[in-house]
Amino acid sequence: MSQTLDVHSINRNGILIRGLIILLCAGIINATSVFITPLATYYGWEASAIANVGTTMLTFWPIGSLLGGKLLQKFGGKAVTIIGAIVFGAGLILTGLVPDTAPGLLYFTYSFLIGMGNGITYCGAMYCVMGWFPDKKGLAAGLCMAFNGGSSAFLAPLCAYITAAFNVKVTLFSCGIVCAVICILCGLGMRSAPLGYVPEGYVAPSDGAALSSQYESYPISKAWKTKQFWLQLGAMAFFPSFYLIMFSRFSMFMTDKGIDLAYATLGVSLYNIGNVVGRLLLGKLTDNLGFKKVYMCCWLLCMICGLLLLTGSSVAMILLAYICLGAGFGATNSVYPVMSTTSFGPVYAGNIYGFALLGYMLMTQVIPRITAATIESTGGYTVAFIMAFVLCTLGVICGVLIPKLERPRLKETESV
Image 1 (cartoon, rainbow, N blue to C red):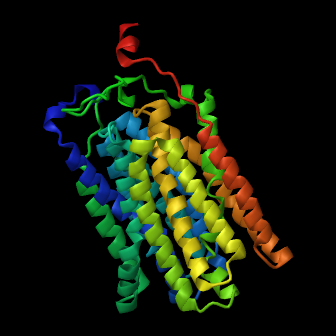
Image 2 (image 1 turned 180 degrees about the vertical axis):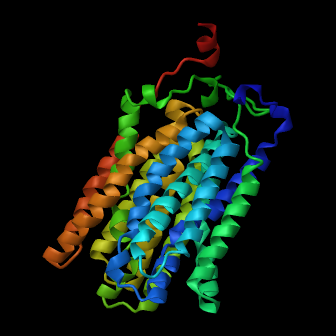
Image 3 (image 1 turned 60 degrees about the vertical axis):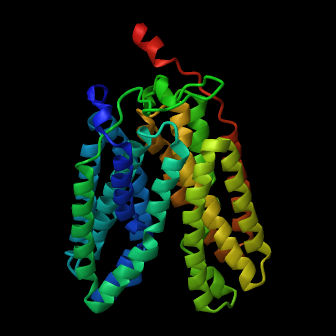
């Protein structure tokens, strides 16, 4: 399919723009509270009835990403983004149709459909875009992740406004229909890059090194047998520890310290700003410095965050910690796609990324539970933060130790 594509008829910047719009819409899941809390209020549900809907959605999301990478490999960018958009949009719409007598259905409509559909959309769009930018992998990944992570900054207030003006069911219907239509229309113009794609006008560096697209790509059946895959899985599992401790506790952490809720809200906003800026700027730096050095920068920012959270006694120190966490953790989302394509090539990178996300999926269940248990038993965050220092450091060691995978050149493979 991809080998017969006439690349001269394709504008890769057009693919990039379509992908960014799709990822912008998909980023709405970063603001789950604009749906779940109003739904509970609208129907008068007990908070315990839907307490784990959001975290369960985060468990299905990596599975959707895994499936999205597989569908991209088999059917191409057009099919995978349309499939993801339909499932994701249907999840939002059906969530608005859940009867007040059956809040448990949210685990199907919200957790399963939205998690799976959004994961398919995210992975399919991102790796389709990156296939067209083997010369600018970091920039492409950084732009994709910045649009995806930053969309909640305006989509969340917009959804909150619609909910206040009408009700949460109208918000869900509107978001489901609009997101599905926009993603499907953009998906119609998505195409996967052909095997061995080299951008027109590309000038090779003086050392003669070829682009990663010029080498054989490894499928998961070969990748999982390499140390590169298991080191990446370890990196993606252990590194996000500070985020997994804090993402549901941003406001709670500050109010527990007696800080006014207005500052807590500001902290969340600053985290989101740091997240977007980190994804874009550090993502771009991977093209210049390589993913290992940028990954070290991400680790350093998370270490600073941890120290500030552990010792900080002022509002300014905690707000700075949130900025560092946003930039440090956010940028890893731009590093991992580059890590995958650098080691294994662009053809199967989305599928391999999905499998590596299984380590992260496991930790989304383990770390929050350990955190809650230690906070309850000790009355503070110290033990949880020490755990995060250790795990995050273990994650960066895994990432930095990934050796170069010697893959044969495509012409060598084809001549066999």
